[in-house]
Image 1 (cartoon, one colour):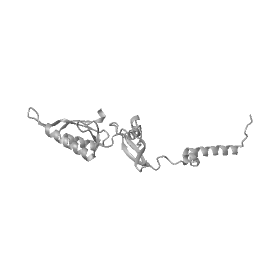
Image 2 (cartoon, rainbow, N blue to C red):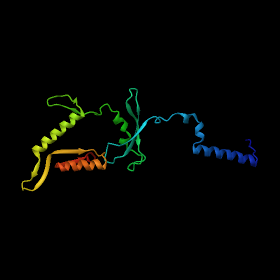
Image 3 (cartoon, one colour):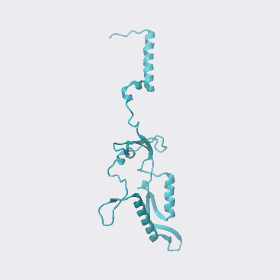
Image 4 (cartoon, helix red, strand yellow):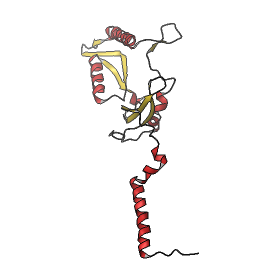
Length: 196
């Protein structure tokens, strides 16, 4: 086996060049010349939107990346945890990591539907019609079943025949307002989806 003979000066030149190259690689400077790093980032021309995971009451922050598809419609193409969110700091559980599958699911309801009495089919209705129907039915039920006083004559102001299930992904302010409004109407059965 032949040995490489280096002078002291050559040894320092070789080790200095090696140290310089490895330092540049660590700092990312050497990667600029690599053709792999010249490819455009897949998220470069997307729109980033902050949101909240809808699955549970932890309310992890997510970043949704969307771009226009062939029809010109904005389509979510990538979901990841929000590193600036104090709750999850960029991490997601398996359900949160699979949000893209929920968003793209063909079974996901995106519009209100109603099944009329005696019908076997659901029909799509407008949001205005859906909210009007709900409000009318709530008023009719409250007018019919509101209990102002109990059997002992004590004021109770209860509406026992109506219940509300609130989203756990709501922020504190909307959750507070929802609870206050429903409690002011006498709703007793009020809960969030996190407990299901």
